[in-house]
Image 1: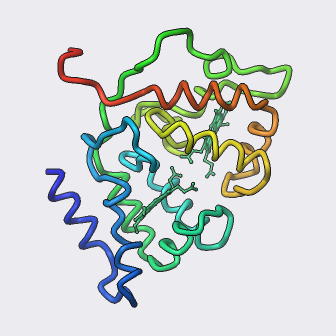
Image 2 (image 1 turned 90 degrees about the vertical axis):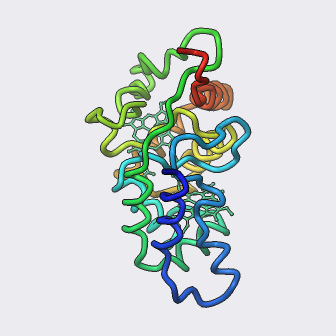
Image 3 (image 1 turned 135 degrees about the vertical axis):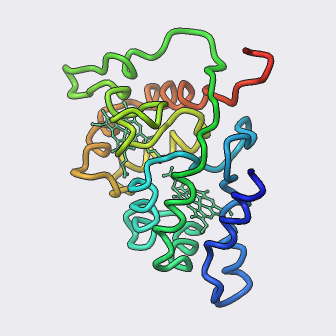
Length: 200
Ligand code: HEC
Ligand code: HEC
């Protein structure tokens, strides 16, 4: 199954990749494993499996036009050209990993309650673990993403370096978080990791 999906990832790439370096850039599955069993612990790259299709497509377009800055992904998205929809469909259709929380302690109040005095709705009112959830149609799953990645994205929104968010909402929310809150929220979401068979 996973091998088939990985092959699909490969087949979905344009054959006319101009140079060998583009082949590397376009080998998505070397960094974003396709399928639910990828190792989460220590993974450095965001997991794309089961993310909302429109979200994925918009991110690739954001790298193309500079609404998101990351040199290598900008080159990748540019090399991908109008293949963004096919890649978004592939990853969005791949099964979600089965994630369990691997950290003791209370869920941060910002996740469940928000802080309305500061104009912060609960993160959980938009970010959900279940792809069947209505919320999950537009907002990406944060659970199981690398801690450093999450923190860097929140900082990029707060600094205005990432402007892919519709109506600037995530920029506004992130700018209201302090450094300690960004660290706590990133740690919380990253602590969701692939369930071990013996947990059941
Ligand atoms: C060499 C590793 C590498 C390869 C190959 C690669 N990516 Fe990425 N990708 C990354 C990194 C690192 C990021 C995080 C960028 C950032 O910090 O903004 C990323 C981010 C993304 C995102 C945004 C994820 C999110 O949660 O918002 C999408 C979508 C994406 N990549 C799709 C692709 C596709 C499609 C391909 C193949 C055409 C690809 N990537 C190839 C490393 C890679
Ligand atoms: C009103 C809905 C809403 C709320 C509330 C919300 N978000 Fe978001 N968030 C979004 C949407 C939509 C996106 C995708 C924006 C884009 O395309 O760049 C997003 C993107 C993100 C990303 C980038 C994910 C990635 O894969 O790159 C992070 C990190 C994030 N949100 C964290 C949070 C945290 C932490 C909170 C709570 C403090 C929060 N969000 C509250 C809607 C929301």
